[in-house]
Amino acid sequence: MAAAAATAVKLLLVEDDADASEAITRVLRKSGFEVEWCSSAGAALVELETGPKPAAAIIDLGLPDATGDLVLWRIRRDYARDVPVAVISGRPDLLARPELQREVPDAVFPKPLDLKAVVAWLKSVT
Image (cartoon, rainbow, N blue to C red; front, side, top):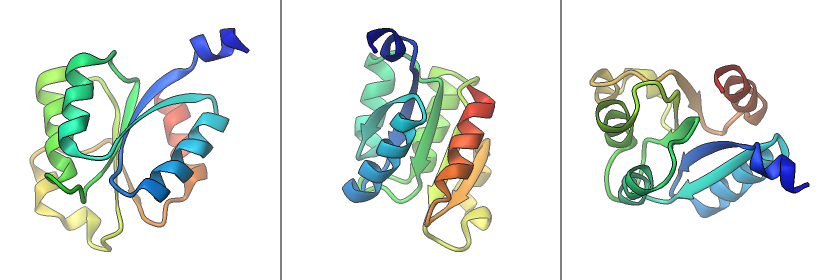
């Protein structure tokens, strides 16, 4: 079992809703991923600066301290342009949001999340 944990692919999940994060994390871990959860943009930026580089990131756009596109932009500008990033949001106009024009995500998933689609995307990019 320890060998499986050592080879798990690390993901960054940035979601301020603890219940949603718990549900997403549970599914991702069952799918073989290691999940680092951050509940704010600030916490995500600290994790990116101090932790190991994630293989991919899932970022909610509605965060308490900033919009998720800031985290996306900082990943691409300061950390690693090659990290695949998906954004998630409960807003129906997700694709038309002007903040996504600054940096386009690799994938977009509306809430409520189709976690099978999220896992399939993650497996295809990691």
